Amino acid sequence: MKRVGVHEIARRAKVSIGTVDRALHQRPGISEATRTKVLRIAEQLGYSPDLAARALAVRRTPFVVGVCIPEEIRFFYDQMRDGIFEEVRRAAHIGLDLIYKPVPTLGEGEQRQLTDLLSEDIRGLILMPGNPNVVTPLIDAAEARGIRVVCICSDAPQSRRSTVVFTNPELQGRLAAELLSKFVTEQGDVAVITGMLRTEEHRLKVEGFRARFAQHSGSDNIACVVEAHESEEESYRKTRELLSQNPRLRGIYVTTVNCLPVCRAVKEHGRAGSVRLITTDLFPQMVPYFENGIIGASIYQDPYTQGQRAVRTLVDHLIQKAPIVGSDSLNPGIVLQSNINLFREIRFAGVDRSEGNGMRHAVAVR
Image (cartoon, rainbow, N blue to C red; front, side, top):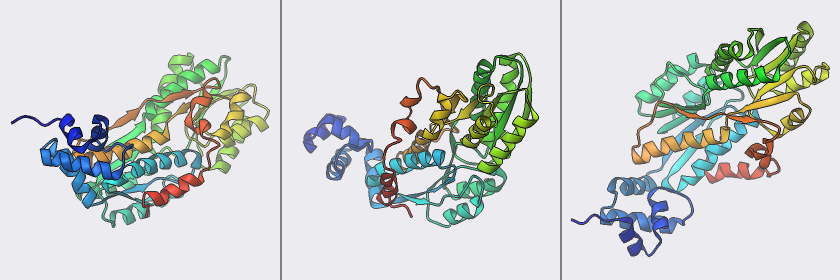
């Protein structure tokens, strides 16, 4: 029997080969009516029967994914949420629905929100673990029920989660160490300001920084590691104390997005010319601190793409039965003053975010 190809599907549907490809692989750019027609012809002709049949079956039976990520710090999590919502909106035509139950800040109330999500009829779960000890039993219970769990940005490594989508935190710490050793050229100490060392992402960044700083700088002058618990007030106060107590301080690595209070403290303490920062990610309010030299560079985690890829992983698995790899690591970017305008957080800074709010309704967030 002659194998049916995309050319025959395109001929019968009276569309281009490109349109057939978009329909078969759930890509945007065609109407729903055209997509349905192409999929039905493909199924009738026996072309890729698994893919075509699954896509049609899913259209008749919507499937739901639960999402639990923090709302603060919004500079970072707004980007991640937008990536998730945009990808869900693209997959709405194949029946994807979303239940969004955020936590106020990392680790706060995650047990309650995850328990609520697991009481729903979901087939996939995306979450950022704040406290792995708390979320691991819930993740294991979800996987035991056949709910595929994707950790995002950070991990619960002892759990049975299906995968983690992140920008390797240990690598980020090593990059920060190498960069800071180049920005801090005179003798002095450096410090690390992080969120919570119980959070896997923060712990691994600190470990990576410690392991690599001595190698690149020729010294091991890490004065301290400060936990600021993602609090602006605590970050500001502890940075002021650090600057007052250590006149030899020459550099700070901020492992979280919560860098503005650290920048402000350095400026107000009159140390803008002598203390350089390596920060994490990017948002418009950071630009003046690049310009005045307080921030030397920032390690970019691309939260928008992390959100997209977490959703795509679940869609590919649930529809096409694609295997899920144990981890999906993005390559960290390096933000400098010279390339700052190339990043989406700066390029789209003037876009009205009400469009993002409207997207919540477009993807049927519940």
